Length: 232
Length: 232
Image (cartoon, rainbow over all chains, first blue to last red; front, side, top):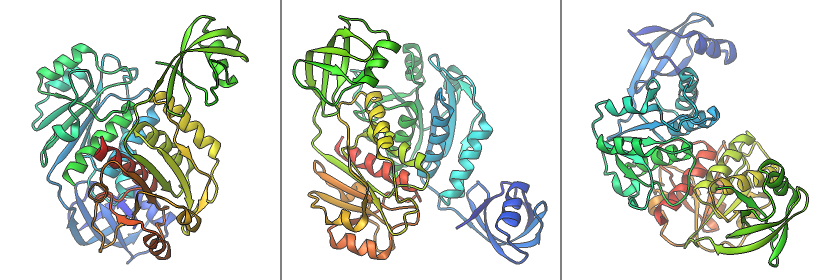
């Protein structure tokens, strides 16, 4: 099934944005009266009829609207962007496929990367949402410093990926079902001791993700998958 | 920790292969008497002393040998290669990080890709093994046709990723601990009905990997992670 993404839907008729309109009319050669499937990224599927089939001005009329099945839990991944940008983009694609609600990028003491083009990240997320037939786009937060991130008022279960000799607790045991989860995953050089202590003070519990040593982006995905699995 | 890979270790002294020797001596500038860490891909870690520090002929003497911790289970993933080769290479990297013992590439009726350069796949696996500090390289089998794959004598629990209305069984419930697992994951166009029936005849049980619609390579990784999780 081909889905088109239009985040601004108001009223019974609306214009499809130009990127999607061009793809719909020029590439896929849809005509007036054809029915197409739209998602709004806010949890709704639409069946729409093409009223005007222009590649710049594609007018659609809503025929049906149906909400996506709501999940009883919410996954927020906060991760240090990797040095190699492809790895973060890959993570975003896979996390959206598997299921994620919110993404934060956090700059840590050992972060090699301090900046991130969020529009590229969002594009990856949109394309993965369409490809996996979902209707909800995860919230992607502006990049923040670690200490600022900890100041946010986060309700729910809070975890930080960090394994040491005093910490054998696996996320699959630490997390309980049907809740809001916030998981912090550190950079290639890991969290500093200061960061770890600050996070613990802010209510983050240290968790392990298994016996294997994982790259940053793999750890992020694995955390996301574990939380989906215990709820699925 | 930096690991070097040498699959052919016999006796107390041995020559490091030229690729690794060049990296060790030319790039990292290791000298005679330096200690370096070697893995053989067969489950062993070695500490070796450099006897002769030449970038083509790097002679090493074994100082210590220690086996990797053995896992009580064995994961064999059999997957249709994706059209885009990067996606398979990505899967190999991530599966090795998370833990996998054997990989087969299976050509299905709906496969768009019929060939695969196994040396590239092996290189990815070696690099992921070194990066994640493991000592075992998964067995990578030659590419086979689906029907030939089913003829192999596979002992253990056999699963095929396929969801239909009669099949709500999740892999996390279907698989039991401490066993050998074989998981079949289909191509972008999924398995054909004939293939599905043949697989069921050969003892493969249909399983779901969760509610989300996953790409081939994501399904492969998710299956691998679930089997690690229920055993971890």
